[in-house]
Image (tube, rainbow, N blue to C red):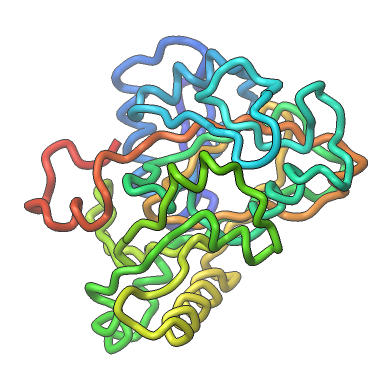
Length: 303
């Protein structure tokens, strides 16, 4: 049986079956994945028990991979590969973290709506998350369709948002959960960056909101009105009509487009049950402002 695409919604989310991601893929298979990704933005590949090397190899087909620093606490990692982000509640010895572990508090920031690496000058293109262990309940991941949310805005609102630039920072998202214990190296390496609030998605040509809990304020506006606008748009873009909730099974690989989606992890008993998820993140090529200034359409746009 060949590769098959089953939409999870009219234009957002699709399940991909009939493919082994651990094996070399034919050009025709890549073309199907690419087309589905640019259309649906979130792809679910069930039954893909990848190891870290296989996940890295598959992810590299979409571009250069980010490496994952230790944002809090010890730099010791339980994982071998710096390209793998440890999205788990496990300490370097593989034990469930204690309630006092500041890495656990930092990771709870992932329960805020966000898009990966918007706090970097060149943000993420896409992320791939592999389920290795899951808790008996909770721990789902929700995704919001920011292209559909933009389309649903009144025309007057779209005109008002056009050209706005927002400052993004990892420190903004974590201050919302009361976390401030960053390594000094992280503070030096990740200063706040500007990103467009509305961008054009390269893979589909559609306009999309670009939002996140990392978004601090609108540059050139007073602080509070800018933050109120960001909060208003996040609330609108995460209405149930724009959201897909993924209930994990071990072996799932889920891939999403960080340029036109937000996501958040849902709570679970993280001081009792193990949740071991490995993420690879593919870097984009340009800052959102640089990309928008390039002639459109860009050659080689999309994945």
